[in-house]
Length: 223
Image 1 (tube, rainbow, N blue to C red):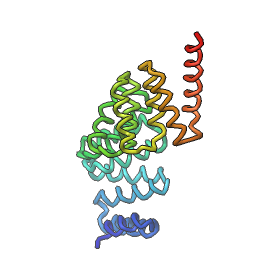
Image 2 (cartoon, rainbow, N blue to C red):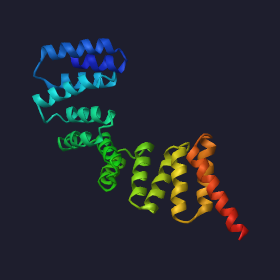
Image 3 (cartoon, rainbow, N blue to C red):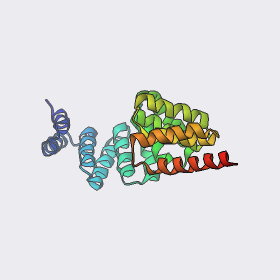
Image 4 (cartoon, rainbow, N blue to C red):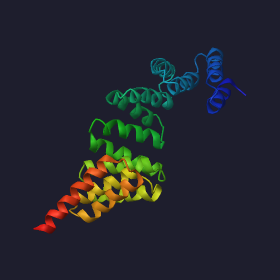
């Protein structure tokens, strides 16, 4: 077994010190092979050593800028520091270099979403849902983005899809409630706010929204 494979196995077994030693040996054996630096970068990122992780990913890119996982790793370094604007370019490059995986599109979409660039985020999050059709969280973030651009019917369909994947997703119920308020359907909104609270009793947003809708319905009945 080569040092890289050994290091990855150690990482999976959460033996991080042994993984670091294996990746160090892999780099010493092949100093011009970028994958050693990428894997060491992933280990450092996992251990929240972002400054050193950034250096390792950049070294990998310096050796071979076509290694998609090095760009993806660098994007994650910036994303975890909430440097969303800086994260966009490496995530884009990871995709351009052939990383056709849901995570790459998802992280790029989120980086744009958190900058409130909703229209740009939408296409990437949609692609992430196509590549991960059973991932509730990917669909949920896509639903939030649809709602932000005013595609309320599509958002409702997407949040409903989230609940078929994870029936206990309280935030999906809450956002369905908000979506139904936009559709001027307070009864449906009330139902979903109630379900959000049933799942998560301390869901303050759902509790406040439910109270306001109930108050509004009472006022309307009194008129």
